[in-house]
Image 1 (tube, rainbow, N blue to C red):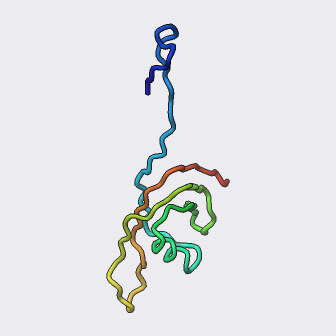
Image 2 (cartoon, one colour; image 1 turned 180 degrees about the vertical axis):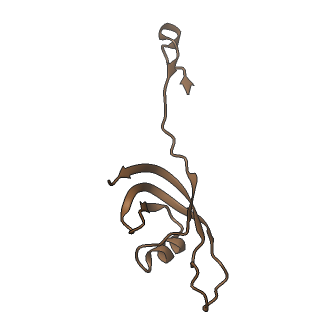
Image 3 (cartoon, helix red, strand yellow; image 1 turned 180 degrees about the horizontal axis):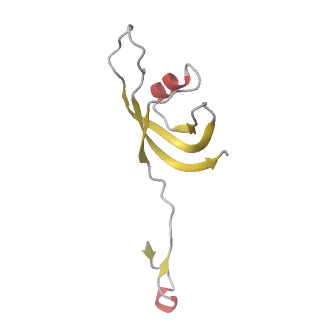
Length: 106
């Protein structure tokens, strides 16, 4: 972004860089949620909150983790409920996220 200040005729125009907090879409698929009430309360609030997403190995031990400073739920897709099957209760959750950082846990 370029702006002109009061002495720009002598010093030239100033160039400033601003960090804009943009929300980008992030889709989470076939995961599990820690805690029983956390997801439900977050969906009801509809306000951005911090969350952590972990990539786990075959034993369930986190290997890589993403910290999201502000995540806002946008879309939740779930299969039709069938008590006779052992299917996932949530297929995907789309959030708008800002302030993403990566943690290497290994």
